[in-house]
Amino acid sequence: MTGFLRIALLSVACALPGTAFAQSRAYDGHWSLSLVTLRGDCSPHSFHVHINDGVVILPMMISGTGRVTPIGFVTMTISALGRKASGTGRLAKASGGGRWVEVATGQKCAGRWTAARWSSS
Image (cartoon, rainbow, N blue to C red):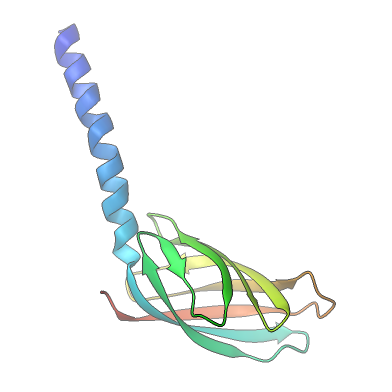
């Protein structure tokens, strides 16, 4: 019985990383993002991103980092034109949204973001 239990636990442990990997790929593809300002004097922005293995790849004129968890939670920090913002939210199969706030400048802007998937490749 001990040998069977070890094999069963090893099988579960080996299956988990693959399952997490497959789930994180559920959000892979091309997405349109729209940032709307609800507080402060920051202009709205729209741009496209690509998600690959849960990593958000930003367009060339925007720097930053972003991650999507296997269950769709998003965290991002972006910088462009001397401004920096961080955001959190959630993605579903074809859309998503959340909140963002400008950091490290005097603007004190904040708002919401929405996302729409336009390709899954």
